[in-house]
Image 1 (cartoon, rainbow, N blue to C red):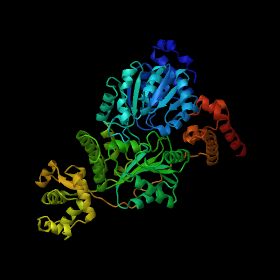
Image 2: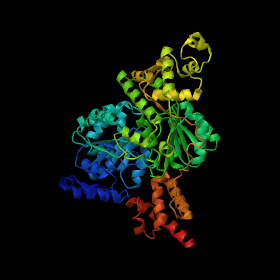
Image 3: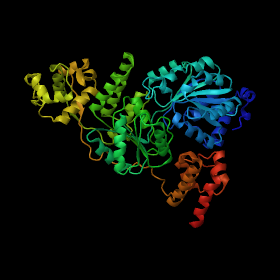
Length: 620
């Protein structure tokens, strides 16, 4: 793209806000094909173009990329994007080049000849945007290269990676404060989809952005339906969910272990789904191939560890499943946010059990983090378990965690659609807490249930627990009911899990009021779901849309995508194809008015799609 219009002299003269935003709006419309800014985009762009720093929190699908891409085109020089997503840089660059933006990347996938060419292009002022991984940025050669170039800005994407809760913690992110030291006059923008107040402050402190403007967008994603259920038979529950609601949709299924991802992917393949595993233990080539299939094909299901999904720009992911509980609300929100980026209905569906809490605690205790870090992780785990166990609107609780509010229950989560039944669990809770106390706080749930139900197992007899006053007092409740009681007491902080003792339960201070009879407890009544809220969530097509034309346009898009070697949505999103069906443009001028059609895409693809429309009209 020709940046001569935005020379340093011109930029110095642009002191009037209206002129500044007129230029930004021109790029939004001419290059990216959108008519107006969304939310806080305009304010963020204005701050950055003026040379100020910014810390941006914006949910997945909210348009974060435009917040640094447009300023990079407005300001003199090249915008440098620090991103951990080496596997996705090619797709990001391809999408920008489709719109005429001079973009490139530097990472380990390039040979020396390609690397040298890109470095020369940077120094010659021939790049608008350059993507670099933090590990490469911190190399002396790269820093010297950047110091010899004209830079428009630095964009630090996925900025939560500076925080140790970050799902893919990257130590090189901690060195990015050098940008402020080495390039004090180059504005910086840090962006993430997920951060509570403590994490925001940590990002600002670690990146020397305490003085930056903070832009915190509304976190709500109303098109996503949140549903959380107890884990009974994970495979049967998952299969019913997919067959009933998403038989032909693209989606992501998260598991805690690599071994489980491969098992679930193989089992889904035998069940008729196009499923692929993805985890850090696979070779780079296999991971790249599976990711490419997911991005380019329409009905692929990826079964992954948390190593997958950050930065994925696929708009039509119709569901995100968690077969194990995430370690934090931040992780859950970020991962579920990969569904429904196109704004159409999508599902965030999870099943969990107390065994998930124990496994996550064991992983936490085995980490190399400090005691303070482990305490913070424990707090986040407790918050996640609390979200699972609440009986009120999940969306209200989720937004509250991030400091956002929703005045009324959302009407689009399981607790709103099927309100939870509760029962007076005070006496059962006292029995459970007493059993824990009288057995020395050294045993797990299974043994405590055996004691309460009066079983004469070897462990019960060996420890003389059949002589305790609580022995046999809980015969009226079955195993699942007692598991529910213990799980909810852990979730509410009356009990905690002692992982060094293999999941032993310990009493917490707040349980005293219950044991003394000073407090009553209403517990949720766990009912095994029959349908898990059956709903078809495939994005509905607009009423009256011509299916024949729709399929013809999709076929033309697919052929363009194959020719270009890019995912179909990089050519045009579904919403743009639907606009073609509705407007039936007859000329390039009319085609240019469609949302998502910029000047470059108009030139490259306009006639091809117009031909499809004209042939359809001629044959109608």
